[in-house]
Each structure stands twice: as structure tokens, then as C-alpha cells.
Image (cartoon, rainbow, N blue to C red; front, top):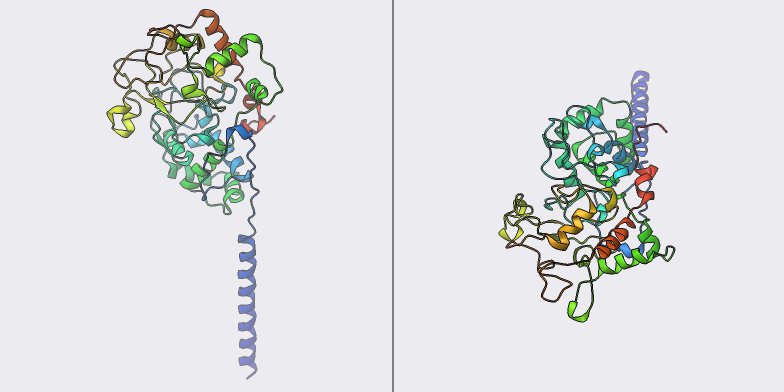
Length: 367
């Protein structure tokens, strides 16, 4: 009888212990409470963007993404990171016509700036990705870029001392997965907002442009109407919003016969032959060389192209076809003084705060 009572008591204690352990683990597992990340941007940028419901911005997630953005362990040779081709001081470009990857071969197209991606609807020059999560997979896994399968990258990070705890802070558990890697990088990239150039200060009423800069701004935003004696550079069709880009694709007259079929490679539609995404012009003075193939080294060369060297083709944008400041003219025909003024305006788009912001810098480097 005593032995039976003892067994019952031991059984009750065991059950109570198991219940206590379960409740303790439940509380611990449900105590994850990441801090939301507040996006700061001017009202004239607008709120027309989407953040996936399954990847909300948190300070912990953004920090992990920043760590991964600069992490060379994600490449097959442990030498290349996202930041290798997207350098902060160059507005997250690399200053090269084409970038080189783990195999030493050059990429097909020029590395785009990562400025204000929060508002970009179709990523890459050909618009093949609709989300930053999807976009991140390409450079991480492409054999000519970082060249490492995501499952192998996840396995590598699991064997580090720092990453399991960082993933736990960001996602609630120390599990490191392919999905979580791209989600964290996407979170960081959404925070790369540039909005403190002299142009922004002008829009906010705290900077007064010079006479030349103001002339350049007016020319930039104006379409020419020679019969009404209105001169313009016709840039606003593609770059006229305060963010200095629109979610459009255009054939901008680089070649009569396209050397790169552009968006057509993704859509398969002939109307997209030679069409490429309109990039932002923010920080444009820092992001040479220019165009999808990096063919122009200076802003002067870019402006000369639009002014006098647009090549006709079946898919040439109607926005730039036969637009002129001269009656019955076939080219834009800006004067040297006007071109100089436009370049002065373009230099107002450099955001020194953005390219020196410590929150965007390499966290692996100790200050």
C-alpha cells in the first residue's frame, strides 16, 4: 500500500515537472518581441510601396540583413559579398563597367545603385524580380557572381559563433534557412533611403539653388516646345518624380540593333526589345559608368547621347523620338550652356548623408 502511494506521488511530481517545463519553454519561445523598424522618408516620396506581410521590418532583422550584406561567407570563395558590387561611398554601385564574380568572369550588365529600392516595382535592368526577397537569390547563387547555393550558405552560417543568435533575435529561433537569409537582406535593402541631397533641401525650402542650377532644374523638368519658345531637356518623362525615376522600361536609343535584348529576355515580347528599367538619378554623380552596359564614363557623355546621338529603332521610346528645341529638328539641340546647367543640377542630387550613414556601413569592421 505504501509503495503504491509512493509511486502515485512520484507520478504526480513527474507530471507537475513536465507541465512546468512545458510552460517554461512556452513562455520562453513566445517571449520573442522584435522591435519594429521605422522608415523615415519625406512625404513627397509617397507611400506607394509594399512590404511583405511575412517579412515585416524589425531592427533585429535589418541588422542581420546588414551583417549578411557584407558577409563574404555567402560566396563560394569566401571573398565576395553583396557589398563587393554595391559600395556605399559610390551610392551602392562599384564604379566598374561590369563586375567580376567568384569565377573571375564579368557580369552581363552594370551593377545598379541600390538607392530607394523600397519604391521599385520591378528589379534588375530587365525587371525580372518583383520583390527584394526574390531579387536577392540571383546574385547569391549565380555562378558568375557569389556562386553558392543557399542551402550551403545556411549550413556555413550555422557553424559560426555569431549568426545563430542573430537569427534568433531576428526571427524568433536560431534556425538558419535559405528563406531567412534572403528575407534579412531584403529588410536591410529596404532601409537604403536617400533623401537629403541639396535637391531635397531645395524642395524643403532650406537651400537656394544658384542661377545655373535653377536653369538646369527647369530644363530637366521641361519638354521642349519650340513653336512656343519653350526650351527643355525632356528628362521628366522618365525621371520627373521627386525620387528621380519612374517604374517604367524604355529603349533609350543606344543602338539601332540591340546588342542586349533587355526586358525582352524576361518577357519574350518583341515590344520589349532593347528596353531597360529607368534607374534613379539620385547620387548620379557618384555612380559612373552609366547605362546597362556602362558604355558612358561621364555625365557629359550621357547628355551628349540624349542631345544628339539617339539611334532610331522599332522600339525606341516615343518620349525621346524626334524631340527638339528647334522647329522641325530631329535632335534635342541643347546649347553648351544649357548642358552645363543640367549637369550642375544633376550634382545637386548627391546625398552625402546617404553615402556616409553608419547604419548602412560594414558592421564587421570595428570603428
